[in-house]
Length: 144
Image (cartoon, rainbow, N blue to C red; front, side):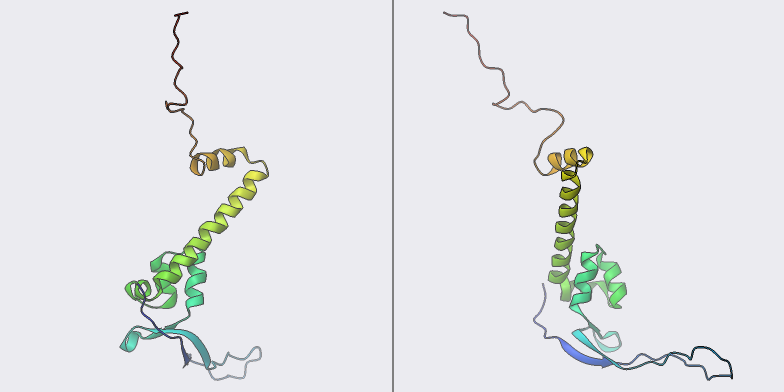
């Protein structure tokens, strides 16, 4: 699971080559500025990064897998799972809830195919009836 970490405020600088103006008109090159990042400090040495847990949650809520989230955050997949497993779980559960709401809304508006799908998957109904005690033929006797 996750270890107890406290969020860290850290100023990160990104560097980009800025070309000198050569007398051309038009928009000036963009200048980089220092920004503060709020999140958990994960990784070691050169791979140490500050990852915002809200970003991880939003990406998991969109349905991204662990590999895609790790690439986005520029960290190792194992580091992501170790530090953010519970946050990713919550995001993925929110995705499922959102999908269920959308499916139910669509089914209630009259989509017959979706109504059948939901009946089979949520209510446990099926196309072929199963022989249970409730569906067996009642015993009949002619002794009167």
